Image (cartoon, rainbow, N blue to C red; front, side):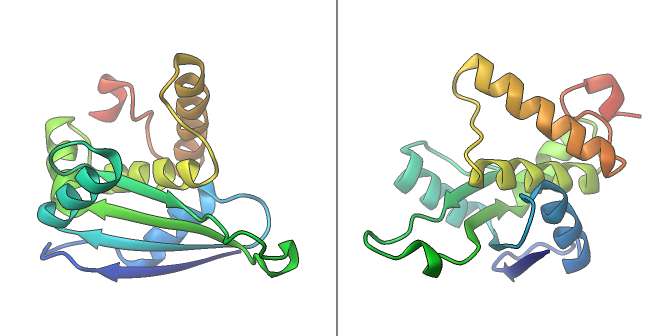
Length: 156
């Protein structure tokens, strides 16, 4: 079971509802209980966080901040918190249109992508990228969405 807290700090007119966020995050969550915080932001906040934490200019679709427990905290007190996701509504919507995807499919992909990052998946090295993409494709398929990396499938 996943506990998800969602904060909308964006001015976006339409966002997926909490049930969708929960379904997508749960599909990509590890077995057992998990907690995640999702903050939906505008481009200015995304750009600021992207610059501060990744040293990259401009807004990005999703940022993930895996939970790092304080040193010395007993494992029994760690709980099930995976971390924080920051999703830029304007970037997700723009990318969906540019990539010929439905907004819902791209939102689902960004939640799944971020959840996998919180669990240690990465896409810096080719082998890691292939493993992460394969996991994303499988999860999104179970959710009823096409392969997000296949342009033809994404547009159908």
